[in-house]
Amino acid sequence: MAPSAATVCSRQVLWIDDECVRLQSTTGQAPAQVALSRTGDVAAALVAVETLLGSALPRPRRRGLHRVEVVVSGAFACYFILPWAPWPRPADWLASARTKFVLDGLGAPESWRFSVEDAPWGRARMAAAAPEALCARIARLCKAQALRLGRIEPAFTRALSRHAAQVEDGSIAIVEIEERAGRRSIAHVGFRNEKQWTGYIALPAVAPIEHVVRDAAFLCGAASLQRTYLIAPACMQALMSGLPGGCWLPSHAGSAP
Image (cartoon, rainbow, N blue to C red):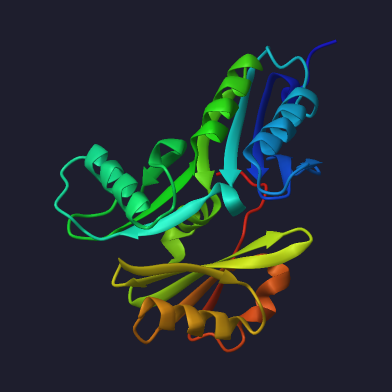
């Protein structure tokens, strides 16, 4: 019997948060899911990842092309703004991210893997970090399963890149709602002024959401907002009420990059 297209070629998105790991096919199939035995624990997350990669992917996996994208959130992702500096090389920006990580008291930088967005000369940049042990082990698991590993992306910066074309200039807030099963959702709030990052903060996503944005703006010293972009599931469109110049952008849980 000839192999199906899914057997020969597949693309999956592996979502990792504090409480579970989900493996979602880009064809729209229901995701496979494994709960973490310990909330926010790297070792527990890796056990769940290994279980899913070993049991929930098309067989035989060693035939054809099978690609996995990884998205991390919750305790496995950290974000901060790097003020502009005349660094000429990407490696210089990564070194700056590690330094700021230490100065902010976030831990030992060698335990984290950093990424810094590209930006024009003269502009601040968004930096993100994920646990190095998690990233390195996922890479080894994918290699052992003959899977091609794509990007390992923190959820907030992934959402920003997906919607970059829909976000206009000006004094804006970009809010991404990170849902957590059984726990309070988190609002990631970033502020920009004429494409220049001016602040970032994560707060509990409690209603009304305009109060969350107001508090975030106060804590970040953000100027008066012209527009607020809310990246959230369709069921949360009602949260737009009260947001200045509110614009809803759909989240893409489980979809391809």
